[in-house]
Amino acid sequence: MSLSIATMVKDGHTYMKTWPLKRELYSLFPECRVITATKFAMKVLPALGIFTIILLVNNHSMTYLPQALAMGGMFFIIPLQGQIWLGHRANQALPPSLHAWYVDIRQKMQEQGCTLPQTRKAPRYMELAALLKMAFDDLDNAFTERWF
Image (tube, rainbow, N blue to C red):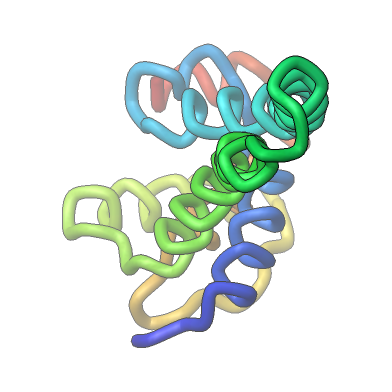
């Protein structure tokens, strides 16, 4: 499945908002660390990029403008790298071990009376994120402790 860069960035942003950042998940999935780093980069690096451009042009004159723009542009692209990775990950099918875990969580949630959307034949990480978010939001902590 070939997705465009814009689609992957959009899917990564959606995945970043959907994935629950719970301490139980940090050791199991790299998404938590990538999301935290991407959010930090989105806040800090654009300002650092602008500061770099201004500093280089101010100290070395306009002859260094191409180098300043290249260095500043690098700071703007780093947050996109995180969103592209997240978008790619969101559209990957779950491996067999996670698929079984997904089905188990889904069955337990249905037994508890949760209304869940229709499942795909081969669920992706995006569906796992939505299911985990629903589990952490709707169910009590005693119920979710069994899985982690």
